[in-house]
Amino acid sequence: MNNYLLGIALSFIGPIMHAWANIIDNYFTNVFKRLEVLVLISQIFGLLLIPIVAYLDPPHFVSVKFLVILFIIAFIEILYLFPYYYSLRHADTSVVAALFSVGKLFVPLFAFLFINEQLSTSQYIGFFILTLSSIILSMDFEEMKLSKAFVAMLLVSMMLAAQSILLKYVYQSGVGWGSSVLWMNLFQFFIALVFCLPPKNFQDLFVSITKIKSVGKLFFLSEILSWGGTLSGYYALSFIPVSISKAIGSTQPVFVLMYALLFIKIAPKMFKEYLGKDGVVKKIALFIFTIIGVILMK
Image 1 (cartoon, rainbow, N blue to C red):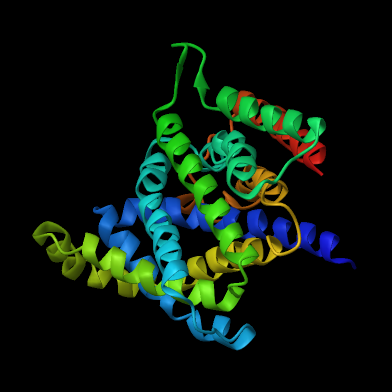
Image 2 (image 1 turned 180 degrees about the vertical axis):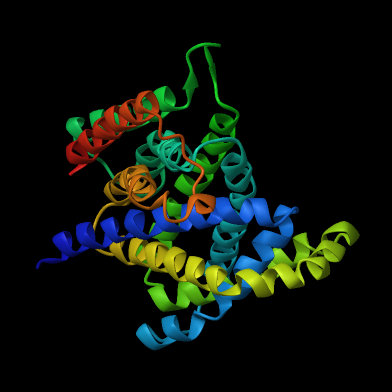
């Protein structure tokens, strides 16, 4: 398998694993009252996986310039979680996953402006299809308005698009995968800790200790899934253009809906998904357009 095909394969691991992480995240938004506490706990569990990263790719010295960039990336990684969790409270999980595609049009623009990455006409058409599908999916046609989650996820998508470009620049400048992941996760933990310093958040953190004990294994599973999907995506950027990697990530809602259809009767509390015939047909139709957009991106 050549490096390009390896990058494509790694990019698909992300949506497969992130789909499960989305489902578990939705469950956590109902368990924890304050999102700041939820974000901090996820970062604490994420620290447990740093030794695995260090083993796979031993970290090296990083200059101050790239530490600043990695801090910005880490800050974005924490900041986007708040509108993301908000969206999970107000929309179906598969819809939220699909709305990650809304900002995909910003990826080729940012990539062209900052790292001189250009795509073909068909690839730009693919981006348009991806974005249009996400907008239609989030539209309430009875009231002719977008869902509450749309604006929040538009912001999320824009932040993640900028984050991807910054990370691609870091890689192109010779900073190793292991080094970047190590510093980003350390920064993320301390940033999340700062968000929990206000008295109400700090008090809720101690109140939530019993909840943490009861869902600790699920938290760890969520982190493994999230890390596995994210790290495979990071590594894929070493082999393929950032725009193509992000486009493949748009298949994530397809997997969310598939998991819901397969497992909702086994664990109904884990899923927030409308599975009425009209809703499923609409989602499947728009997910097909998403896949077409992905194909055009190749």
